[in-house]
Amino acid sequence: QSLRDRKRFGTLLDLLDETCTSMGARLLRQFVEQPLLDIKKIKLRQEGVFELVNNTFLRADLRGELKKIQDLERLLGKIVYGTANARDLIALKNSLKALPTIKEVLAKVESNILRQSLERLDELSDIFSLIERSINDEPPLTIREGNLIKEGFNQEVDRLRQAGSEGKVWMTNLEAKEREKTGIKSLKVGFTSVFGYYIEVTKPNLHLVPPDYTRKQTTANAERFVTSELKEKESLILGAEEKIVVLEYELFLEVRKQVASQSERIQTSAKIIAFLDVLSSLAEVALDNNYVKPEIVAGDEILIYDGRHPVIEKVQQDERFVPNDARLDNRENQLLILTGPNMAGKSTYLRQVALIVLMAQMGSFIPAKEAKIGLVDRIFTRVGARDDLAFGQSTFMMEMNEVANILHNATSKSLIVLDEIGRGTSTFDGLSIAWAVAEYIHNQKRIAAKTLFATHFHELTKLSETLPRVKNYNVAVKEEGDEVIFLRKIIPGGADRSYGIHVARLAGLPWEVLNRAKVILQEMEDKSIDSQRLSSISKRPEVRRKEETSPGQLSFLKPTFDPLKKELEDLDINSLTPLEALNKLSELQKKVKGKEEEND
Image (cartoon, rainbow, N blue to C red):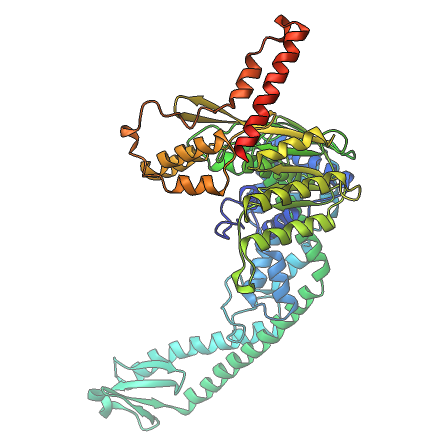
């Protein structure tokens, strides 16, 4: 389920679920929740998916038969626990009918995993035959009203049915005989569950009733009678029907018991069907979405070329998804610090890498051009902002709990995904915690896990200067006037700004707020602001709307530079003599000291 609305839509499971059976859907969830750590098992699954991807007829025929199979596991559970009715047995029989055809479909498969499935799949023909011979194809909902057992399965049931049938024929003939005998053309022979069989005569014809008729019931327009002969036949018919109901119930219980005794065989075949269903689903998804088979290796390297977020590329309709590479290992690229503008795609990239690794280790194909995935033992994530007020935990407390869990349990074989650590508290607290966490993951030999660390603290990019396995990346943007275009491309190097005001404008904040924020941003960029400076800013008058803003106002998209930095950049070192260079250095040093005294 998604973190945002706790629904299945928009999740990896929802994307991958093209299963044909309920059993397959449940097994697919297990695949996602329990990815494999055994390379051999992963490659076996990959081989099966690969063959199904490349053999269109095999995949189509297999899925066509799978769609005929109901939930064997649920049906078996009802049978074993004695709650299954006759319709459940018919559902089981109809499902088993597809098994021989599935074996025929798989007869020429080449991959080991599909051949193993073929060899282990039991057609259960004896169980199919038992139900086919014994249970009516359209039985009643309950098992205590008869009409459960097929003709020919039990001699006693057939004899009682014959007796009952002959009795009913006799009743039909009795009506014609009594009409002729009495001359009452409207005379009828009927039956009610309360009074049994009767002869009905309308009131205008009561004077024609013979003396051997015994009155049984009076209605508004007629009288109902019985005769000794009618009572005798009634006893025979009703007795036969009662015996049939009891006998059919007993026979049904026996059939159900025999089916239950084969539960292990049925369960084994059900698991194989579910497994085939999941492989065919993964093949269907891979084909529909242009996925590739990743190379699974025992090393620590994760290499992904042109990787895509599997879910977002499907639900995103308004723009083309931009693929990105990823390179992680435990030697040179252990901890990637990812900076960049808000809404540029940092969180998407983090989740994308984690999902691709997860998909690879469950045996699925992945959304990429090419990939080499070194096995990870766990995937730890710290993403999103949540709280648990019922248990007294704030957003920041929840965040710290999750980080603590990661630091206590991660290993060098793990993959860690950290998104905006420290944003739930003050700037300096958050920065210090994020910095310390990054150092700890890098320096602790027990951990030293491959880590993707997205942050809005640009100061963290300095970690690469002292920590050898830290690399900086950022999400590229393009500035055109006052507009910022998110390129969604991950490139080397750190970012120096977040373009938060631009995002605020996209969100629809009033122009007064945006223009005021630009002025504050400009002053904060000019120099570090102490509390007095902030106080003076807060007392400034409101900024006019955008159309009234002074044309000389600096655009918030154009970075401001320290004058000393500008002077250094413009300095032509090659044209200076050694003495001139020393004098220039002394001059710059005095300017720096003077600026520090001014700030003090």
